[in-house]
Image: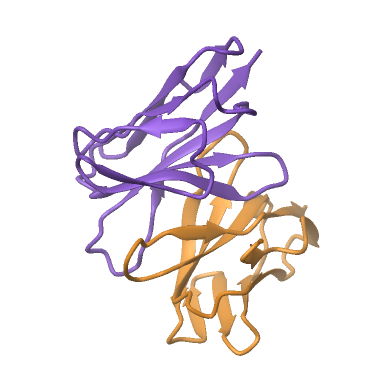
Amino acid sequence: DQQVKQNSPSLSVQEGRISILNCDYTNSMFDYFLWYKKYPAEGPTFLISISSIKDKNEDGRFTVFLNKSAKHLSLHIVPSQPGDSAVYFCAASFLSGTYKYIFGTGTRLKVLA
Amino acid sequence: DGGITQSPKYLFRKEGQNVTLSCEQNLNHDAMYWYRQDPGQGLRLIYYSQIVNDFQKGDIAEGYSVSREKKESFPLTVTSAQKNPTAFYLCASRRLADSNNEQFFGPGTRLTVL
């Protein structure tokens, strides 16, 4: 049972345009969400996060939106750059107890020059 | 400089052999985690530890074992009982007092069982 889903395995976007990566979750008890970026044969690096008490968090070109009623979050990258080409994972977690992450299956973003 | 190291980067073993993957961190983080990544799948949690000498099973612990004798070290043993051990293994750590719940990842070890 996949608690965190990224239904688009890949996405291609033209340089300078907006990239929108989506993530859905099933467990309403998750209270913290994160996005990680991963290059091949490397460990993921943290990108941006959002607490369940917020609906938006911004950091430079990256914005994460959370819609709790729909159990949906999205990552917007504006403007997209070729260096953004990577696999993006969303993760849902709990801010107490085990602090475990549940990862989605990832979306491979390709930004075309 | 601080970080998480995993060694080796590539590891080859014969079927039926146990193999231990190293994970060391000098970030003074409390919790450490082991994940595996398979093609087309997300990262799945194998084991985690929040304090020394204590650890818990994750979602796919069968065929694996861990130890946490020191705060900075969390080695993972892939035993011969693991049915499909070939994968990319990632170690992570975090400070439990951090409010942003961020885990820091090592560079990973690709294990290939021949």
